Amino acid sequence: MKPETLLLRQVHPSFVQNGQITSQVFRPTPKDEDKLSVYNGDMITPADSFAHFINTPNCQSVGVVAITCNDCKNQSLDVIADGKPFPEHAYIDFSGLEKNAIEKKAKIMKRCAQDRGWLFQA
Image 1 (tube, rainbow, N blue to C red):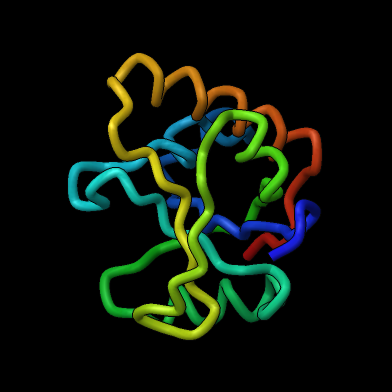
Image 2: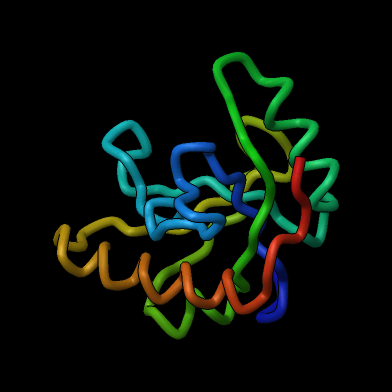
């Protein structure tokens, strides 16, 4: 992936307040094991990533936002294109970070995504 590659992130309905995304969009949950799933924007469009995601059992999204590989690099976060469980899958690695550090980085990434705006909305 290139520095400008968009990392597409699905937005769960509960992660929108007053029309704005919350930083929870970029905060891994315990089930993520500190690896925040994203779609590699070099391999799939925002609309196609949305369609793929909502057709996965138990997955909900109201739209797609994105940050770049460079945004992650600026936060000292690695982006890994693992292609599992589907070819366009990648993840942002938060391993080894304390909760406070994760929350700070998530807030910065939220601002980056907000500045870019919605790339797709349902």
